[in-house]
Image (cartoon, rainbow, N blue to C red; front, top):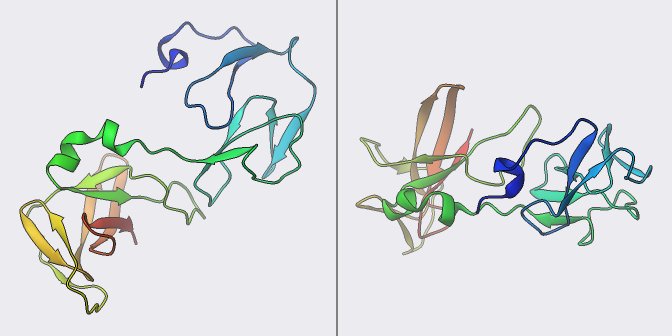
Length: 177
């Protein structure tokens, strides 16, 4: 989905996009002179009413509101919507594996896939010994539960070591080590 704030006209200085919890696109815009003086303090940063924030180590998208008390409840936050099926249908069709990368220093939550690992000459090994008949599909291959591989992704933003494992069929899941 394309949101108007991405392709629309630029904001005037002192203005910002206003969001609502659980709504993908901005619901309006506010300027300094129209907005409330109430703010939300989160992890040392200040947000204005209607501004989005993303708490560290949680897979949440939150919106500052006048009753915010520091609790990440349903009124304030929603689980991040990755929309992988919409943004990466070709990777899913090829049965590639989603890759979950750490987004910053100290981040441990792996929320939405940021890359995809597709089959090449990967050699499979036992990552976690499982006694199950379940398996994953990786390209044209069937991978038993608990099996996978390690590899390095070479990207313009740096090399990332990942481990890909059949842990949640039907696709392999890859995460940064």
